[in-house]
Amino acid sequence: MPLHCNGVSLESAARRFGTPLYVYSADHIIGRLTLFERAFRAVPHQVCYAVKANSSLAILKLFADRGAGFDVVSGGELERVLAVDRKTAERVVFSGIGKTAPEMDLALRSGILLFNVESEGELELLSERAAKLRIRARIALRVNPDVFAETHPYISTGMREHKFGIDIRRARAVYRKAGKYLEAAGVSVHIGSQIRNAEPFGAAAQRVAKLIAELRRDGHAIRYMDLGGGLGIEYHADHAFDAEERVRQYAAALVPVAQSVGGVKLLLEPGRFLVAQAGALLTRVLYIKKNGEKNFVIVDAAMNDLLRPALYQAYHEIVPVTPRRAARKIVADVVGPVCESGDFFARDRELPPLRPGDLVAILDAGAYGMSLASNYNSRPRPAEILVTGRRARVIRRRETVNDLIAPEDL
Ligand code: LLP
Figure 1 (cartoon, rainbow, N blue to C red):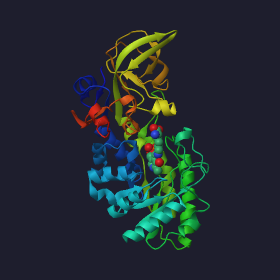
Figure 2: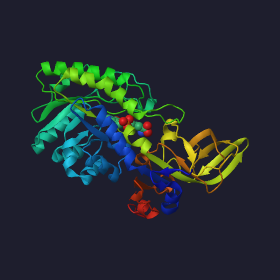
Figure 3: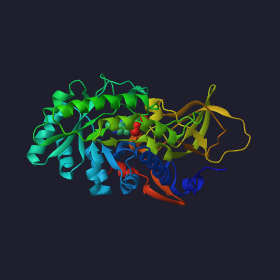
Figure 4: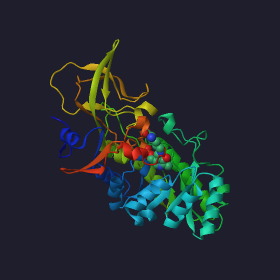
């Protein structure tokens, strides 16, 4: 049977909206949020969806409407959230190691929930900005717990050699410098992304718990425990994956720690887990070619549309939307039109035979797909559609070359 997204045929969506095309299922996203909420219901908590995973306004709105908050890492992300619903500011945490004064001012004026401060320099600047605007703000230090989590080196963040956070051993001294406009209200941590085992999350939480006890003895009223994001999924179809069980184990590692601390609201910043598997990138086969022994399937999407394989050697399943019956498989590289050898979606992949004009779906592309897309090779970015039940609607029109050159001058 040809692939569908809920009630919508992908073949007809591609004909109607063109390719490359990002397709997302609203029901799937809501389902994941529900699993998350359920897993943590035993403790006071707030899910702050990590906007960077997929920052499309319509997707942010799905979250905002269901009471989720947001983890933002730039003024741009904050503006997106405010554009969806200004009232969600009270559920926003602001992370990132390079916040600028204008970004701080915007966040201070919007009245966000928490600044996750990542260095002493940042603490000084934030304290200055808050005093200047006469706005009191809540802060957490994002500490670096020195916990190893197995994942791709580019997305591991919780060890001392990484640029993120403040060394947990120095944290107490830094909290003392908060100044009168900043209230030390929380502790935060984020150890990395695509972490598939709950154990390192538990270890990091325990280190945070210990620090909270010390900070409370020092007189700080710590009420927020932000344990970041990072819960991974399985990209390989042949790896068993039960989303409900995965989030249950994750919660089982964190909830008892939060309960032992007591008097804290748990903040969680999931991104990938909520949106990755709700999305696919549809692309058409342009050409099939052979160089020596190697087969290449050249498709109309490229690394600028979905960077993960090129940047992290990430694996994504690739499936024909309308499979042919009983044909012999081929082994091929699936590549895009961009002039880089790194422009591939799969290497030496066994695939059903494909012909020019065939539509294929690159799966699990809902997180860090469109949000990492660029205009390299002057390629306009794809359109995005959101499927709700049997209805598909464009949530971002396809870019045009005019959009690309509009800011330029001759
Ligand atoms: N909170 C903070 C402070 C983060 O830095 C991140 C991700 C998250 C939450 C959300 O992590 P998640 O739940 O999505 O794993 N582009 C890479 C992933 C980079 C993640 C960066 N930070 C990829 O495509 O795999």
